[in-house]
Amino acid sequence: MNTRDKHEPDINLFRAIEVFMAVAEMRQVTAAASALRITQSAASQHLKNLEVIFGMPLFDRATRPITLTYAGEMLQRHGFRLLNLIDDLKRDMQHLGASSLPALRVGLLASIATTLTPGLYELVGKQMKVPELILSAGLATDHFAALNDRRIEMAVTSEKLQEGLGYNFTSILEEPFFLVLPSGYDGPVDDIHKIARHLSLARFGTSTPVGRRTDQHLQRCRLDLPRAIEADRTSMVMAGVITGKCFAILSPTLLIDGVAEGMRLRIEPLPFAPLKRTIRLVCRREDLGDIPHRIARECQIILRRAFETLFPAIAGQVVYHEIANSSH
Image (cartoon, rainbow, N blue to C red; front, side, top):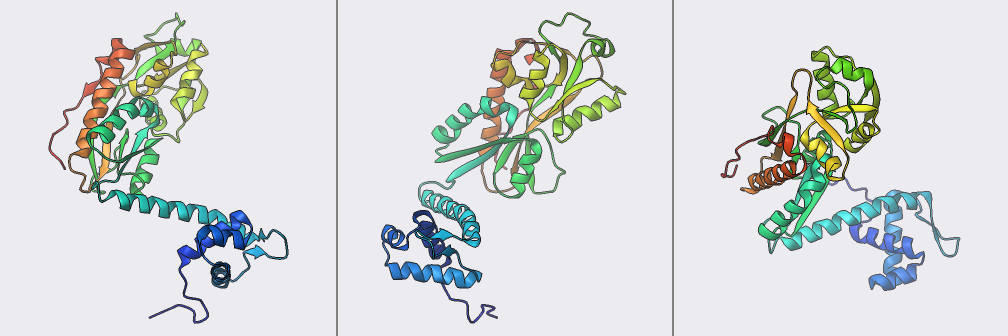
């Protein structure tokens, strides 16, 4: 059953919005029509149709040049997003003639995004011949939201959803957490209570997966440590340590950017029960062939090389998982 209102015009909505956006930018119907290579009357008709559909004026025509009404400003904000989405769609469809995968969208943990980007660009662009690599950095929770919304195809992350929810997981490595102290700290390192008398804990907030994981571990160990800084980014936690007044509990993938930037730190084993986490590649169960496994292997190679270069004393404590060659 056709639910269209009998008074609503039957129009090319996308074209009408293109015309509206041009007029909104130029503030003249004549100039916008000329830029779009249509007649002024055609442009005016597109604007009139939009105003009929939305039931309110989009321009104040009493002013010269014409100005946007509140409704026009709202449509302009949405119009930018709509036209960008259409442009993205056009580009992806154009690439399909040359490649079965026009772009690969990958989410990365923020702490290792800088380290992984050059190698992944080389692999995806030069070896896989995928026209575009789109990377986004964030927390593990950001990755699963993006996977669910189909904004990315895969993520290199630290969390694992329950099985059976439409994802495949490839383990890259398992890493221990360490006690991270100021480089000039010369107090005890084998008793957390003695350490806490000299330094306060710089920690991740419980809004982050690593913050929740660390908090739960401290609770299991019945440790209530004095806290000075709570942050949601590794760089801020490490900045607390280099003040000389704080310590932190971090893993190699969380340490990598700060050490690469020259932050001077003292890294010691945890003086209580060990804490570990696994870095995985997660992807939706779709036909990506061996791409997820190739990405996972490349991440493993890059991270192993970085660990051995930046902190060789602890690099050997990271466990690397075997990654199958077969596609999923």
